[in-house]
Each structure stands twice: as structure tokens, then as C-alpha cells.
Length: 379
Image 1 (cartoon, rainbow, N blue to C red):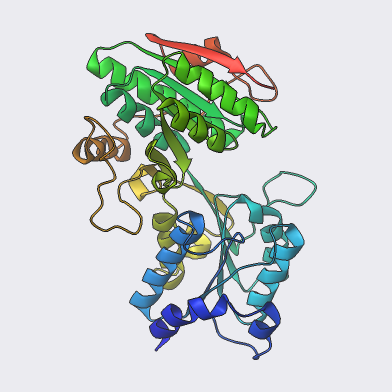
Image 2 (spheres, rainbow, N blue to C red; image 1 turned 90 degrees about the vertical axis):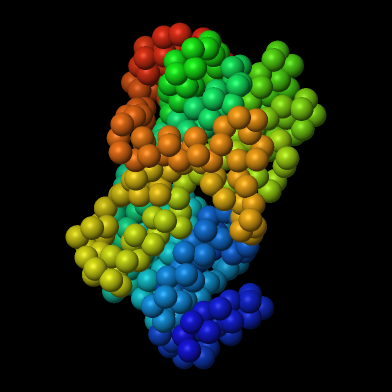
């Protein structure tokens, strides 16, 4: 019966306001997803988390629900979390860094509830210092391995002039960028070719026109593929469409957004979430394995790689936009990454206190001899 409720009530709940959900008396929800204000068909974190939760719940006859908060600010998110917890939620899943501050508060208010924060670190509102209590699991991802796979696949497909565009050079941006450069180097050495990469971090300002102008200039100068992470994504996609360039996106599969998306370097939200859910309901070692910890999920645990299937199309080929690189090639690479046959650096030491790396720091720190790296700064 619970599995029927899990599947059937999801659509109905979208139509109900928050008071109606909480006025029926205390429920006994096993699993609850609080979305980041999007729907569970967003083809992003919400959908990946919801897919994992529904599959897990059906297999174990659990009840699962999702709720969409009224806004993305801390108060709106916390209001929805409190409503779910007050109605009896045992496990609450929070997808994305937007929940970091709200999760930090909620884990204290509801010590009997287990919280799973996806791609985020709980911290107080006035600091970025990590604060993970024993009833909370913080899940992060080996973005450097996903970036490596992106760079490797691009060069193996025959592209030799590449670009990387990220926003703020924070830990995740640098991990993607460092991994991408290492993947380019590895594939270039294997194939006996010369490769060049233009590396750009645009900074905090989401200046769409400026970012698009930069991407257009890169394509006009001969860049084949730009790997983009964060704020510049929309601008890069527009530039690629105009200049017939290609884009590799990050975090979630973005194939559906545009035909210029060659592939996406993704974080394995579904796989990682199932690992944690099994620790709660099957092995019952959550407190030992994940509670109170920040856990990085890598390729060996389905946490990092390229898009390997087409969302909502079981017969789709996620590699059909490549000219040469195949699914079999990717699976061979994934095996090497999973078995640590290829060790990928996540970050390097840089002089700039804001995290902006120079070309010399990237080349020396990542052993990129033979790859021509140029850096443009847009602070």
C-alpha cells in the first residue's frame, strides 16, 4: 500500500498549500524530499533525488513524499522543513547548497530526524565554517574526476583547442577545472597530439553579456569545446548556438537544454543518496558511516563521471553527439578512475587569496607540460 501512496500522492501534493498538508494531524512519513523550489521533473538534482527515493521506497515498502517550498530564502526553506518534521518525517532530503543554512538550524531543532544534504555543507548564517551534527549527512562529489572525464573525452573525440569557463573560483569550480586540464593532458599524451586550453574564471558577477562576448571570442578564435561550470552557463550556451560551437556542462545532465551540449560532467546524486538510505534502513550504520560527516562520492561509488543515459528515454544514446568517443571508451575510463589507476588532483596551491590561478600555477601544479594553457581573469 505504501508504494502506491508514494507514487500517487506526489502529483496531488503539488496542488495543496502548506496549511492543508499539516492540518491533517501528525503523519508517519518515512522519506521526505524538500525541493529547491523546483519540481521533481526538473531533470536536475530534484529529479535525481526523487528518482532514488521512489525506487528505494518501492523496493522496501516505505512511504515517501515531496514538498515544494514557497521560496528559496532561508526562512521559506526552514518553514517547509519544519512542517515536514512536525508531521513526522523520519528522513528529510535537501538537494543543493541553497539548504546549507536552513539545514544547520533544522538539525538542531529536530535531533530525532535524519537529514541528508546533497552537494552542500551545513553552516551558520554568519560564517561558512562547516557544522555537521550526528543526525546529518553532507554529501559532496569528486568533481575533479567528472572534469577529468570531460577533458579526456573531448580530446579523444578529436578536439584539440578547448576552453574552461567557471564563475567564482571556489573549491568546486577549481576541482572541475583542474580535473578537466588533467583529462586533456592524459588524452593528449595517449593520442600523441598537442592540445591547448583557455582557462577563465569570471568571478561573482553574473554579467551575461560580458560572458557571452568572452565565449563568442573563444569560438571565433578556433575553440572547439568550452567546458562551463556555474554562472556563465547560459551565456556560453547562447554563444555556442550562434557560433556552432560545442559545450560540456556540469553538475547535472544538460543534454535536453540544447543540441550544442556535447555531454555533461555530472554528480551522481541518485547513487550517493541510495548509499546513505541503505545505511539508514538496511545496514543501520548511518551514525558510523555518514552521520556528522562530509562524504565525497567518487567514480567508484557512482558519484562522478559523464552523463551515461538520456533522461526520460530508456533507449537513448548519451554518447551519440560524439564523433569518435563511445560508451565503451567511457566505461574503460570509468574503470580506471574507479580503481584509482588514474589519480586526479582536486586542487593546487595558488598565490591569489581569492583562488584565481595563473597559467604557470596550473601547469606546474598539475604537471601539464605539453598542454598550452592560457588564463584570462574577469574579476
